[in-house]
Length: 209
Length: 209
DNA sequence: CAAATTTTTGACCGGTTGGACAAACGTTAG
DNA sequence: CTAACGTTTGTCCAACCGGTCAAAAATTTG
Image (tube, rainbow over all chains, first blue to last red; front, top):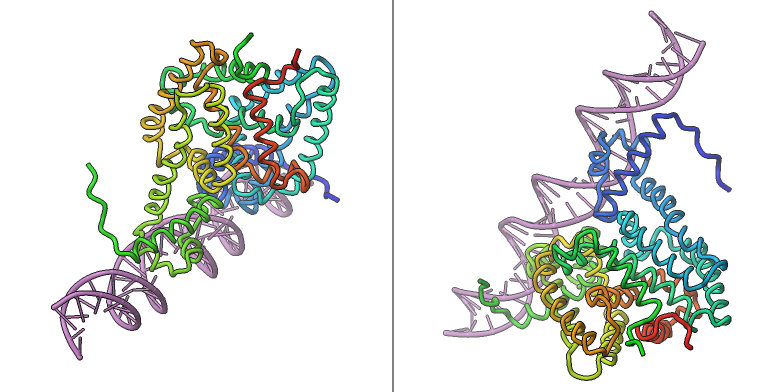
């Protein structure tokens, strides 16, 4: 279906990387329509026509960025495996997702922006590749439930809740920091969040005994 | 500080409502920069200059919308009270928030858009009014913990997790529906979500026994 | 070196957008 | 009726934005 990847010079590879990095910064902060080619070009340290020499259209940059993003973004879920203790598996999935929110907030926001606008550019992927992956992992989780390893509940909504709680710390970062204030909103907030989420997902809120 | 509200004719009141309704539709779907005055005017069934007669600038519409939004948006949290059983209080707070995600998804997305872009227009409110409210409610929750009514954990992150999980069903609706598919993604998804969230927040995932 | 190729840039273009304005239209009160 | 006031619209503008183009500059190749 797809033609072979175009042959690229060293300069082309480097400049394209530079542009994608700049575009990630700009797109994740302003959304697609809120970002201008000029902004990206300036962030990448080049002129607009020069940028357009490497990516013919604004959309091409966004598309390339989104394709790369999705692979790394779904990696933690792909790793969720049937080996090892189920509760441990889930706990480390949550931890990995939270680490991604901490280390790649721009990627998270880029993705959130796209979904918020109705996912115009990646809807087919959501209904195809993503749905398949989630269904597959939901089956794994269901197996754990049948085996009595974790409580019976809805695996799909379980996955949603993990996505929601972890990505919240990237997408709503401004709000989180504002509410926590200067002292509690520092770097330690991710460890606090990790501790809280572990307890929530394992034990819930009922008091012990 | 603030001048008295300007006196308005009946027509002005009606037309302003019409515009705000149209603007909510457009802004929540496209973001602030992604929306044009023409789009809003058309959605409101009037010409652009006519719209600008009621709101002098695009920003004024957004600002008015945001002010109204915040009141209703925080209402459920304000209701969280020290009377009644703590677990019941939390459960109904979660339920109310989920109902808002179901019944006012546009408001949720408008808010999410604003936060995602770094909350340029409402940051002071987040650091002031919102933080005060959350701190207040966190104190209430801490009281419940001290009284042994609910498990000891971080009240701030608990509130975040409720926001995240419930608003997810409005903000990421496209993704939720895509993953659930045609059958499970119908109207019943909110009831499934409600059941799941109740179990998660009360009991967590550890198997019984 | 010189020719060929790749990279960079300034100038430009057509379409869109937020907003201004004056004139027309409608309504109401005296 | 008419003057005053509120409402609506067509027209216009300047700024912005995505993208083109030709020519200059830099680099690679022979």
